[in-house]
Length: 195
Image 1 (cartoon, rainbow, N blue to C red):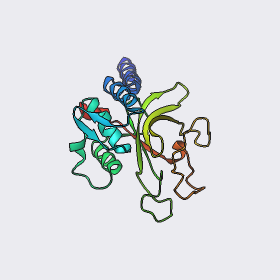
Image 2 (cartoon, one colour):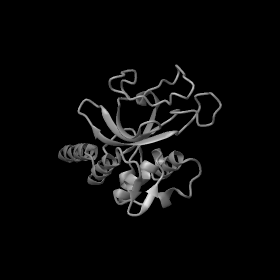
Image 3 (tube, one colour):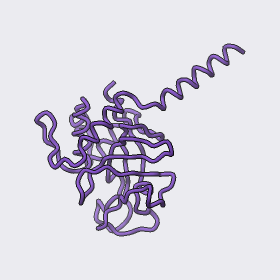
């Protein structure tokens, strides 16, 4: 009986501690906040594109992870390549932590066919998670540049808790919605690539 109790306590401690953000995750979150408002993304002499994946590459390098060479073997856009890298390393997560990437589908009409069938169209990085579950994240906004926004995937219709995510130029679709919470796909623990 004592062995079972000890095993349960160890497991509970492991589960609790795994929910705490890692030092690397917090470093990524801090680096993401550095990017807000930047007009040029340059880290240690390397300049990155001003787009959503460029923000992630710059934040990763600023945090000590050269991720760009890691994604070259993959095909697709920058978002898809990041997703594939994390998927291959079993780092896609259901539960978020600061420093995690956030992936979205259907943020714009990537293939130009007028349908809401566009997978992996946008990526951002979590900076903070409030006690009530509100997620703050940094991303590249096509009109405003690099900004901090928010998402609550548990309440995607709440306009106070969800920043707009679907591009104004994309066809509107009631079936997929418009907010960061509506279009959310999955989290990716990029900071674990440093271990």
